[in-house]
Amino acid sequence: MTDPNGVPPHIPTQLYLISPLDVGGDFPARLGRALEAGKDHITAFQFRVKGFEGTASQHEAAALAAPLQEICAAHDVAFIVNDDIALAKRLKADGVHLGQDDGTVAEARDALGMQVQIGVTCHASRHLAMEAGEAGADYVAFGAFFPSTTKDKGDAERPEPEILSWWSQIFELPCVAIGGITPENCGPLIAAGADFLAVSGAIWNGDEELAVKAFVEALEKERHV
Image 1 (cartoon, rainbow, N blue to C red):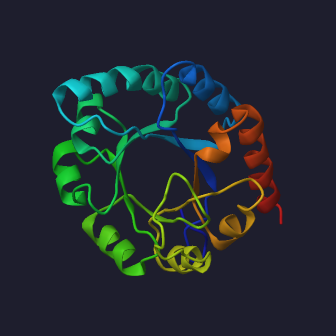
Image 2: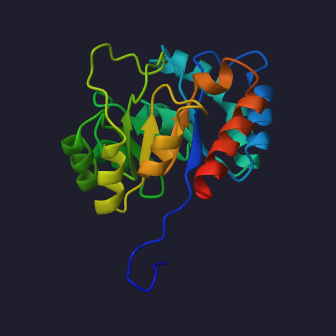
């Protein structure tokens, strides 16, 4: 749907939760609490675990993913697998998120089909983002915008919020901001046009319910500026 001038309406910024590396123990319950606290504000959850290459390990990863996938489905939240096209296919996930070394959009599309969401990490590169869009990605991710233990790229170039404004003014493809985002520093990213804020440590390193509510407050504040 567009406005009378033919411009697509801007969808309010949503949250995109990224799991910690340890999703065992009581994490399913924590995820459920977070999704409940962020009802109508959380669009996706990314299953991000490492070291599960190979058939046996993928079986273990699938066992960890099963309860989380069920919780996401119950809350109408997309379940996205990080980095692993084969695991995304095995889980019949809603999507896969690819780093620059995790396979191509074409490979993911061929393996997973047209209905699955494919996202691509583009760091601070406009060129990589345009390439991802041309290849058929469903969204592009820029970051890390702030120091982050999740996106530890050392001396990698850090993007400015302006890249989000540039992207959203030219392209209809959604953009995700990632990297060290907190309720306190997310305002400029929302104002710049981020469609989604990808957050991890700010949620899981403390009380997830309080953290999600703080993000929701920040989102609502920017909507009414």
